[in-house]
Image: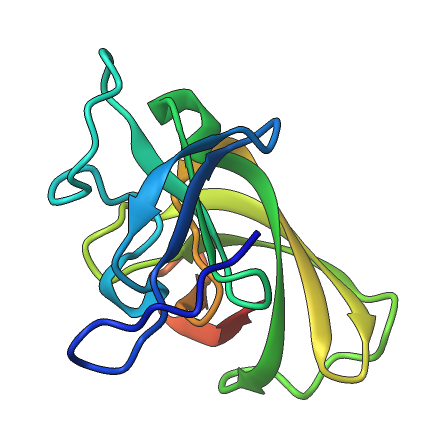
Length: 151
């Protein structure tokens, strides 16, 4: 059930949910939240909870424990390769990958899955990759190979 009540900015209020889909409370519009956020949720859960996913179509903000923020792989689109020719589908290469500017680089394997898509598998899970963020790939000399947008 989604309410059509709107806040002052015109964004619809809707539900906070946990992973199994249980409603935990009401939020003030998905525009106010980002994956990994803990503060400003306005909900008391008895434990530290974080925004783990935003579901725009359902207008839901999914909440969960910190360990649910970690991902071993991501998909990227809108690719731009700078120091190598555009790789063909099926190409696999090793690199260091960053999902945010201040995020430490993590060893990863990148597999080109389509004309403008890659699958990035991290050697160590990364915290809170979010759709719309950039992922940047570096070689061993810390030179940029290329990057894309997290899907």
